[in-house]
Image (tube, rainbow, N blue to C red; front, side, top):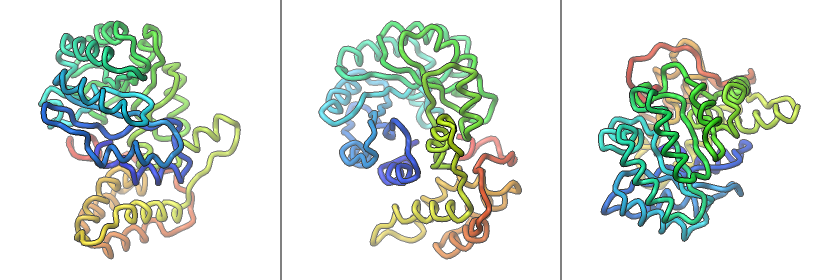
Length: 324
């Protein structure tokens, strides 16, 4: 996830058990774009020992081809085209999920990229922009271009992250696609992972927001599948994770308020699993100093009680970080 799941975060997740496969933040691609050095570091300094796929986003075909060729000079397991980002500033530029409104352009992009990419080529998609009725048309295009992997986030772009999940569309993709299909969306626990796999018969799961809230989730799922008891963090484990998030951002000469404000990006996700009243999340968004930030974290997390870190049903406004 952009500006969140970067190289320092990869290191931290790896220390908590880690995933089997990683995707970079997306490289923004346009006529004047160059490879973002900080995102590229996730590839060249990948600390996980696991494969990593370079994610790209954009709609200018010559530039996408150029960047795809450049990325193949680095140790990537594949290149992934983002057709799912629901952030308005992205889709209004006809990129990410916005491209789902233009199937002929998607067809042209995939054809050009498939010709240029000699390694694994994958796509992450949603089931439509505002209507899933086009999903079969999308699948027909995806099938035509010999993708090596398709990840399906089982919502439309308009649904963002807060509406019901439509796993039946992922199951449809599993039925018709000639390549493996990965299910994405609403996986935040061992139980939700089981439900997603049962409902879709997908080859695997992609976890984004759930891993920010609970970096142990990959380990927990693997333990459950192998018949072992799943690790459940205590409050003190979560507090140590928060300290790790903060320390990985530490740089000399950067104002304290900048660190605190960046930490709020993580807290928007973690806070959903901390307390059902919503007070922690509400108050953490208002702090501006290191002291105030960690005083609040200690108040809620400095204990030895187990924490499932599953999202509580906290009421929110119709827009904001927590709903994408």
